[in-house]
Length: 168
Image (cartoon, rainbow, N blue to C red; front, side, top):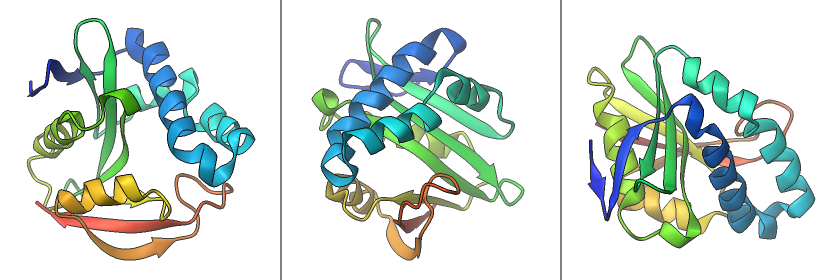
């Protein structure tokens, strides 16, 4: 359990899903409304951050779904999946509420995900090119850009992204 400014990192559970969904919707609107527009963000969060989609993450094999909790609020969430027989981690989500950013929560979530996969030698992720805050955060953690994707997140959403990698 990693402490980050009054928040501790723990495994997400079924009872957390409504709060996780609310966090993701708020964070996505704060980050992406200016890039994609509110309606498009509603469409994406409706598909990617529904309770059903989040519940599926809880059950996904070879994955970790963690959150930062202060006992009354959830300040951040991360979800990662082991790939290539556990030698690589794909960080699929790492979001911190806008009001909680800059407190070490993102670092704590990342650290927890990294130690959950002891056989992994690298971690990769995709980030929207226009999301300068996220790019700066990942670069601060030692990630380097290694490519681009035209379909970040899932097929059919046509979201371009940069692919980042960090060795562990």
